[in-house]
Amino acid sequence: MKRFLLFVGVLCITAALTIGGAAVYVYVQYTSPSKLAQSSDIIIPKGTGVRGIAEIFQRENIVDQPLIFLAGVRASGLDRSLRAGEFTFPARVSPRHAAEILANGETVRRFVTIPEGLRSGEIIDRINLVDGLTGEITKIPADGTLLPETYQFSYGDTKQGILDRMRDAHDALVRDLWPGRAPNLPFDTVEEAIVLASIVERETGVAAERGRVAGVFVNRLNRNMRLQSDPTVAYAVSPKERLDRPLTRKDLQFKSPFNTYVTPGLPPSPITNPGRDAIYAVLHPDPTDELYFVADGTGGHAFSRTLNEHNRNVAKWRRLRDSQ
Image 1 (cartoon, one colour):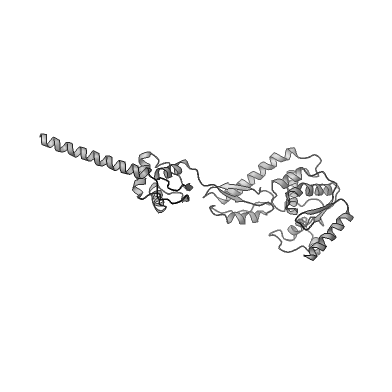
Image 2: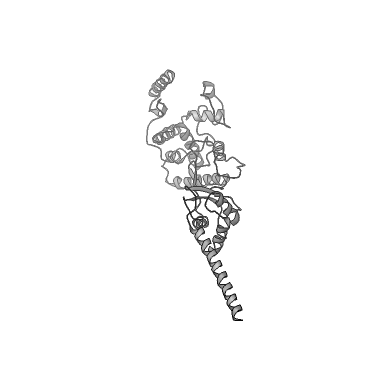
């Protein structure tokens, strides 16, 4: 009996040492630096389970044996906290640290920049080309309802979600700026302000000029002068897509409510999506008595108070254009 009890004791001790040794091995492997050579962004697709994550980590050299990762996350209680998405893993990250990164859920920040002055269809074309966005956009929003900006997103976010954020950002900006607008502006509604801002946006790409251009248009509206804005003509002639040729004299006579050479006042709706600065400029135009402007050949414009002065600037611009 004593020999039997001794034998049983030896077996128990051996089993305990074996289990303990296995636990130590798992712990060491789970917490030791990996073979990941450099910092990497890795995507964990939605719906991926713990075993699938272990296999991805094995392919990326974060774990040698998937079972080690499975045992480690279950022992640490992280197996139900691992999230999908795109994550940055530093070089030599341990399996445990990798699991903690997934559990914390801090995904890689991606950005999409939408320039000012694009039509809504053009914005959608750009969003459709952005890597990492999913889904489809089935309806093109009206021009003048989206705010061009840089937007942050995570891998797997939807294209429609970006579009919704652009619309919400536009509405929030207008709500913020409208109450503090300058007095005695020649329009009464937010919608009219956005129409004029869309024209200002297309007239100049020079930020410092926006307030001045807005001031010219405000002066013309106050004097019941037609805006005579070339971008409105281009929109009238080609409302579906951007005109890819210079305007002609015939275009300037094209009958359309959008053609401000033939139609007084503002067009019925925006011709593009204006940015923050153009909207602000229209609500706070520069105080000026100028009524005209024309390209100066350097990317900006030459402004004038009288028609004679304007005609001289136009002649100068035409000579410069012809020489080039």
